[in-house]
Amino acid sequence: MDLTYSTKHQELQAEIRAFIEAEGHRSPKFGGGRNRPDQQALDWQGLLLERGYFARTVPTEYGGHGAEPDVLETAIIADEFSRAGISPGLLDVGNLIVVPSLLDLGSEAQCARWVRPTLTGETIWCIGNSEPGSGSDMANAQTKAVAVGDDFVINGQKIWTSGAHYADMMFLLCRTEAEAPKHKGLSYLLVPMDTDGIEVRPLVTMTERPEFNETFLTDVRVPMDQIVMGRGDGWKVAIASLKHERVMLGDPNKQLQRLHGIREMMRETVIDGVAVMDLPEYRDRLLRLQAEVLAAKFHNMRLLTLHDRGEEPGIPGLIQKLYGTTLNHKLSALAIDVLGEAGLPYEPHEFGENDPATAWQIDYMYDIGLIIGGGTSQIQKNIISERGLGMPREPKAVVPPARS
Image 1 (cartoon, rainbow, N blue to C red):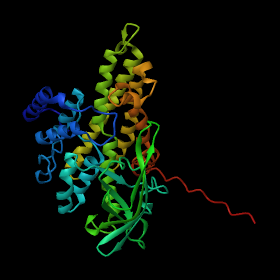
Image 2 (cartoon, helix red, strand yellow):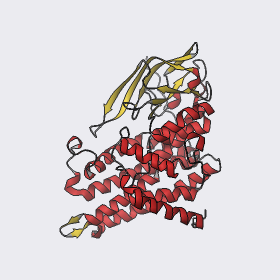
Image 3 (cartoon, rainbow, N blue to C red):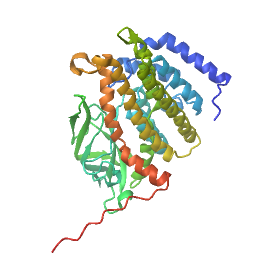
């Protein structure tokens, strides 16, 4: 991979720096919160879409910029926004999972209906994958959708549905082919969250915020044309969406943003007259994490290259999720330590997300959940070892015969 900036890339870098200088003050705060975007975030998103700094390669007919894929352009935009500490736009499940999944596998009508409002933040999505009895085993989903006339009638329960309490739509994995084998009986449906029969119960985490939810679906009716691909094609859609989810959860641009923020905090925080940056133990931790962040960045560029070539990421995609979520937590842990006493008391309701300490604390605690979400680290390690390194599967336990 040639990482030398051409004249075109140098001009893009200068253009973005000028944009940040002129418009960066309009950016919302980055990190710490997982809520429906406010008007400032929506206005910023609109500006990024207008300039082509978000959805750069999404076709113009669907609301994107329509540029040809270019790994270095993607890296330059991410680097400059991270360095400046400003928001790169709405990095939610709609834009990072649903939109690319629809562009890959959805119908033209579905892309025309849902991509643009998702890019602008008008439509917010949640993902209905996990169930109480099938967390890491997605193919064992038991939520059923039965064809009745021109509709599917859905009954079942989902859990850990991030953002369901404020989402407009759900990207729902369900079982439509009752007699088909496990992996071949699944389908994905696009379900409006205001449909009769949907009940959302927030699950409050240790952040004291409703980050996740359990969602109950009782006789929920959805038109048949809201199926992605076709009946029984759900596992193909699941594999595609998981690929995008792993990239989202291990996003190195988030890590770059945190790294730059921690570096500035270490320069500004003084202990007994000495800047934290000048304390060897802290500086050593920062340098080690900087090396890990750069490794993650270049690994992500490898994945972008594979995507641009139309190749599947395979094991490298799993590595990004495994490595990235753990690295996110390491970065947040360093930030909490740098904050010292200010990082210990946690009063999110009193200070709110705009308080720097609270934002880091929310990330620190939320990141633990993301090490589990999207396929636990243990599951990722198993797949990497078996499919990537050729190691044998763990033998199944033999159940001893019952005593007479």
